[in-house]
Length: 299
Image 1 (spheres, rainbow, N blue to C red):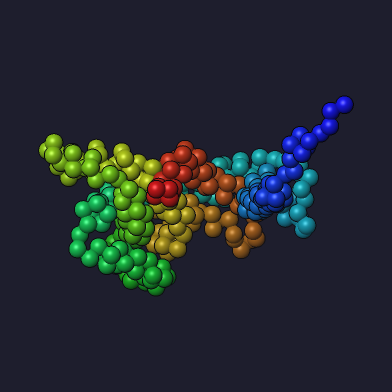
Image 2: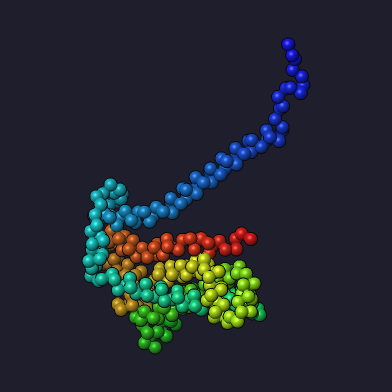
């Protein structure tokens, strides 16, 4: 019979390997716990929107029950009432006004912010940090503090209840944010391709339209989406400066809170309809939004 020698015996695991196994298990449990917490927080953030959607399919008596009834029968009466002018006014003019103000103001913001961000990031002007701080300082004034001067100006020039007044206001309100965002996006554009285009004889408008804009398209899309959302959701100026002709969708939503009571189901149905354009825009631009917001995160 052969006998086992010291070299034939199985080797004991190294101390470092024994320590690594529990550490790896702890890391996996930690990652699983963080993932579970993220799911819980995400679901909690979605609960109000899901509840609003569910309530919009209930009748007014079922929507007003306390505690709310989850198993109440579903109906489309609120949507029929909303689109059938059940509130006494058609929802289409406010929706068209919001779409007009949001689209045109976003377009004007991009046209103005792109050359400004170019001069602050690629062809930097002197004391460009002071200029960036000035743009940021314009957002420090509370909106309500500028409401009365804007109202008096609009009254004197005859622009009350005019949708183009909102376009101008939304452009001026979103322009500082757009310049700040696009300045960081354009800072990642390679200067070499811009210099190559200039060597070929391209002027500044051509460089911006055919070189800078395609390269920074994700960042521009992210900026446009955020400006569109801010314009679409704005309520204070639209509530004070508009009446019937230029009434926007958020102002129209306030008409469902009347002296006769709160029409909760109709309000939820209207809120779902008003939220759809923003959700559609976000869904259509989600890939560009993720790319734009992550520009510069990884070098």
